[in-house]
Length: 86
Image (cartoon, rainbow, N blue to C red; front, side, top):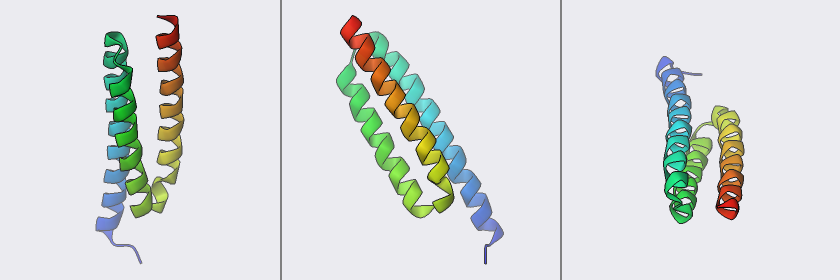
């Protein structure tokens, strides 16, 4: 049996996940410009940990986890390519 508060909490978790992904995207863009790849990796690891915690607490957030992981992988590939080219 779900409480209304639980539904609101789920929406909050999804919104936080989306915001986290957006924040990471912005940070990665800034860091790629400054060519600080190590910092990018640290940020991505922290975000992955946060996402895993969210997934453990909310089964509904699995879709968000998959999306965020895909985005992270794409970002890592882009960073590596940019680093190699530069």
